[in-house]
Image (cartoon, rainbow, N blue to C red; front, side, top):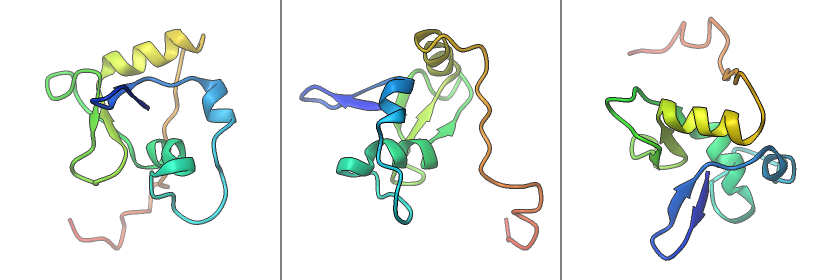
Length: 98
């Protein structure tokens, strides 16, 4: 997601921007050069009845929440048909509470 304008409107980014994004170091904090990396790592999908477009991810305090319309826009903008989102293996929550 890109933040544009005085009110920092969130907009869907491109694969070109992703390719040029910062990729090093520890967990990105979502600020400055690490903004795109933070969005990629910490953003979450949400059902259409909860989120339209992109909104700040208040649950995490970093990244965005995105509705199905934002996913469709990203696919169309970048000439894609599918996005696979995965960051935890099937056993990642095995020893976690909740």
